[in-house]
Every structure is written in structure tokens, then in C-alpha cells.
Image (cartoon, rainbow, N blue to C red; front, side):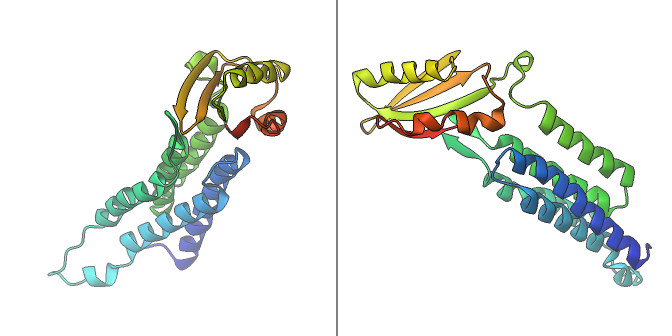
Length: 220
């Protein structure tokens, strides 16, 4: 049985791993950031410690048999509710799946840390951060788009022409376009295979569009 200071070490490591994973999500302006990932990883580590070491006094009685894996199984199930809260449907597209999967994996890292599997949790945290940071959606070789922009405009004949002119002036050329009419508005989904700027500067690039009177909303 580890000494109390090793418990603190495992909890501190879980907070560190969760914070690093959350930092990458926060820098990409995702719904779940540093605090969410840190708390999830820390809590899963703490519950794993309780599951593994919190009932040793009861095991001394021969009539009592405990299954430490039950708490771990409950953690994997419970995180599904939190992950579902990060997934959003926008028109015909869905966002937040990667963040939800990252939260689920963060629970695994917290559990591995609480179990004392230091090599596993360290590699797991580094691997998740690398996957989220490197294999982002701007990799055309993976069949992904550099960006997907959702724009709602007035459902008027000249609005589409104006939008095309404004997009061209910003250096944006769509490789795929989807349209949907709802309640007097035309929803346009633009799929871009390349950007004239970094994805972090996309919001600044789209600022002139938000000022156009015929454009109601711009999401990306």
C-alpha cells in the first residue's frame, strides 16, 4: 500500500496531465478547456485511489469481497454524460466530437495515474496532446477540410452574389458548399481545403463579414 505522499503525487500528476490536455483545447477555443480536463483527470484519479485503496480495512474480513473494477467501470460510463455536453449539431454538421473523445481519454489517464501506472499515463497524455495538436482538421491527406464555416444570410437573390464577392476579397475559396433554407434565412455551409491564414487568425479574417448587413451569423 503506497504512503500518503505517493497519493498526493498521483493526484498532482493527474492534475498536470489534465491541464496540459485542456490547454490544447483552450488554445483552440473549444468548449471544454483547462479547468474541465484538469478536474476530470483529477477526479478520476482520486476515485481510482478510493476504489483501489479505500476499502482495505473491509477486506480484512473474510466474509467481505470487493471488486475494485466497479468504480473504474462507473467512471467510463459517467463521462459519457459530460462528453455529450460538448457535442453540438450545427445545420447538417456536428462539432465537439474530438473534445468529447479527449475527455473520455482523459478519464483513462486519470485512472492510470491513480493506479500507479506512471509510464502508461505519461505516454497516454503525450499521445493525446500530440494527436489533437498535430492531426488537426487542416490535413488534406487525411481527407479533412482546413475549416468549415457556417453563414446565415438573408434569403434574397443578390445575397449569394454579395457573399461570393466578399469571400473572394478575403481570399477564401470554398471547395464545397451546402445550402439550407429555414425561416426566411439561407444557411450556407462552406468547406475550405486551405486558408490564407492560420486557423487561430480565422476569426479576425472573418470580422468584415460579420459587419455586412445581409449576413446574420457567422460560425466556424
